[in-house]
Length: 178
Image (tube, rainbow, N blue to C red; front, side):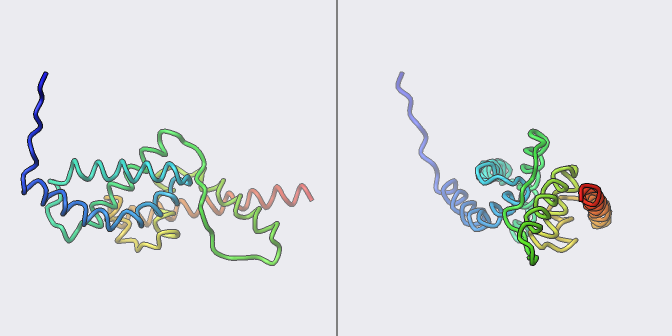
């Protein structure tokens, strides 16, 4: 069977070039975000590929190119959310700020933080990572996740409350163990 492929038109090539320019410039930051949310570099790479594919398929839905950050950011967050829902495993942060004079205690605190974050729902986990790892404003988070700013505030409030409770529980357990 002799199959011939249609040659891409100049318009298709221009569309692909515009997509590559806009999305390609965002892949590094999207990868870092996915690493923070998913806690796994390989899975973050796969998430970036999936997000780029979803963006390509939905490219025609982008009406305002000046909003490409929010548009692609929302796609990236949704891909990560889908992956979290599928695996429901622990989130590990690739890097954490701060130091203590006791390196063992610092490691224990980081491990406790990772475990506490892993116990959060994906919605709570995403707003925590976007706020405290990606350092986005409440408005930027709302835009990326596609929810009102008030909902972002509420989710952050509840997530922080859960994290504090988790830390308090670990502290009580350490006191009993000493």
